[in-house]
Image (cartoon, rainbow, N blue to C red; front, top):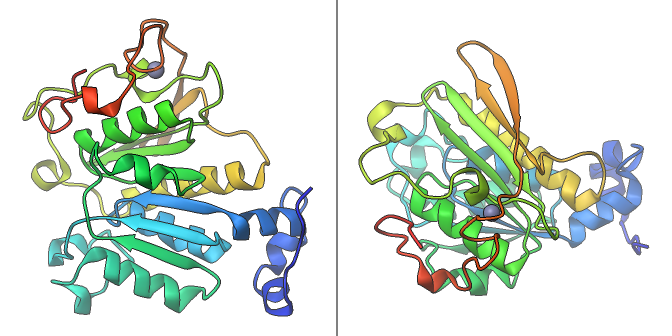
Length: 270
Ligand SMILES: [Zn+2]
């Protein structure tokens, strides 16, 4: 059972949750008691931060080492024109403070690494991977899988996105069950070289935020075991099963024991 201690302002602010079957006062209290680490305050991170803050997730961690550039503003909607040149985590923290004083924001202007990821994971119930590069994506997968921390994955390029959830329950798959190794550096384009439709991370990030809220509240069916592919140009959603791979280099038999055994900056190879 969850001890509910919503005050009058909170009963008002979250009233549309409190009256809902599937959330209710207990579900809202679980959100307020929860802590979520958002890795990246960019295109995907913006809607994730917005909606998790609005939903009243009690502690939001935001880690990003970038500063806001004018070319970010086409999609990174927690930042404004006056934030160009400022650190993204400072800009994101101000956005949250303005939206919802219930949310404690812990920011770190750094890059997630094999050395610091363990201390982050120890403090959070759930991770949302809103990063934009393979080394961080594989690091989040490997570290969360080893530590048993659930995480929501999202990725975007041009008109297309992919999104799934790894619930970190026993026997579940991980990202390397689907993509065992990262592509060679330089073989896959990124948003800076190939472009990205500005509204695309809004859709994909909102699905990640939806998954996070459901996991925290404990209601509904998540994307654990399924990956959704979204094509904004065709306006189509397709889904594939994600099954555990017995020879997965992380969650399979004899798999990875420490993130220190992976060359993340070079190839993400174990
Ligand atoms: Zn795996």
